[in-house]
Length: 165
Image (tube, rainbow, N blue to C red; front, side):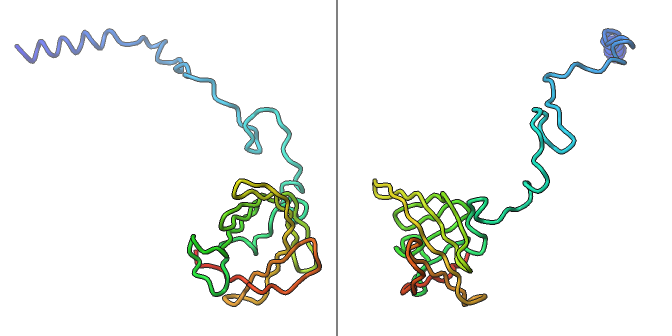
């Protein structure tokens, strides 16, 4: 008897389902999807970048520090520890020093060197600074030499080694 009651309830519930016409219609989406343009854009109508503009640009044109300088550097006799006062971390758009940070405002090549203009901030003050970056040596022996970017190239008395990542 119990089985027949369950069977009748199941049949009654199935009769309350949708009609064949409802099953053929796709369900309404909860949100209208954002259209995607053929080039992967979000469909906002913006024109894609010209092919040549989307390619990697020279460092000076893009105001980006070249990749060869990126990474953590410390005085060649330093420990590479966060508390090392000669440590600096260079990325494409900024240089972080021990107690200050420089945001890149311009980059220009100067022979094999790179001149970087920085908007500096640290210890409650702000200033502008130009820094010359030079790589000397190769492989594990590469050293970063820095000097005043507004002056002729000078020998760096405190060259930096690249720290392990």
